[in-house]
Image (tube, rainbow, N blue to C red; front, top):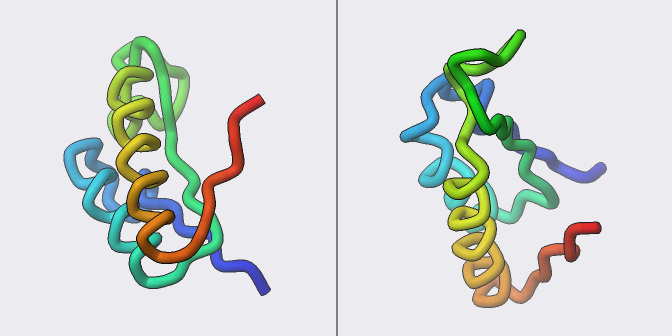
Length: 78
């Protein structure tokens, strides 16, 4: 079964999402679920644990580099 890690809900803190997501990829996770919102303080749910879009793009660049080192790839976004 594929392993999907959710650092947004697991930590509840946006500052911990990047290191947890990197740890998940390094440990061999097949996917990462991350909450993203352009205005977290106005989100109807999960705002306090969401990344801003800019933070998400930075994280994804980091995860792509890490995945490559681990012999994996990150699917391109639509």
